[in-house]
Structures are given as structure tokens and as C-alpha cells.
Length: 149
Image (cartoon, rainbow, N blue to C red):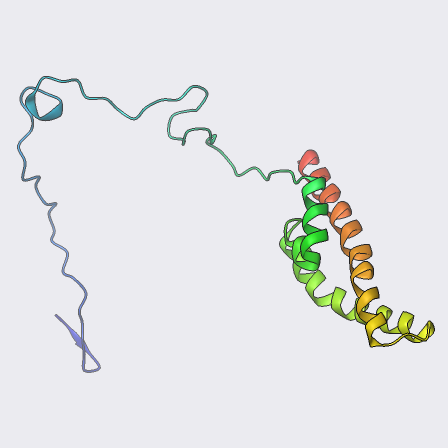
């Protein structure tokens, strides 16, 4: 145990040899000596050795996104729904859309002689007019990049 700068070293001391297995090997073989066969890892059809069932071994493959689901999420959640397209679209939407929607809604309300109530009634359709096309274009660009790769 070494002390550096007055602080005790609490790292575990690793022995130079490997620990021995305390249980003896099974003389009969398989399942504690009952003569039953032992089985290895189950092999599933179509999966190479060393991979999980249904997940191929190899590099990560990005999945395509659904345009319909992107539109539904953008309609229900607005800018938060754009996180389905990708992370950067969601972050950009949360930064850009509130400023743009507020500016346009106030301009429309002032231009039409409306009140603050008009701003609230105009804000959601303006937001949907931005987020829905953004989600469609974003999903199509993402899927096109996946097809090229």
C-alpha cells in the first residue's frame, strides 16, 4: 500500500496467479452428473454465430423513417415531433419555430386588426405549416441518404 501526498491508496491488490475453480469437473458430463446432455447457445435460422437472434452481426445499419409517422408526430407534438426525423431537426425546430411563429402570428394579428386572442388562433396553424413540411422533407432526405449508402 503506497501513500502519495498523504492519501492512502485503496486500489485492490491483484494476485499474480489466476484463481482456481473450487468445483471439481463433472465426471459423467452434463447437468450435474445425471447423464443429461448439455446444450450450447441456441442457434436461430439466419443468424451468424456470435450475433443475437434477429440482429445480424456487422456494422450498424440506420433504419428508414416513416413519412406518415413523421407527419402524425409533427402534427401532435409540433417541433418536438421533429426529433423523430433526427436529433438536429428537433433541436433546430425548438430554436427556430417559436421565434418565427410568434413573429408571423403577431404580424398577422396586427395586420388584420385582431387582438391577442387572434395571435393564439393563428399560431398553431402557422406552426403546423412549418413543422409538417419540415418532417416530410427531413424523412425523405434521411431515407435517400440511407439508400445511397
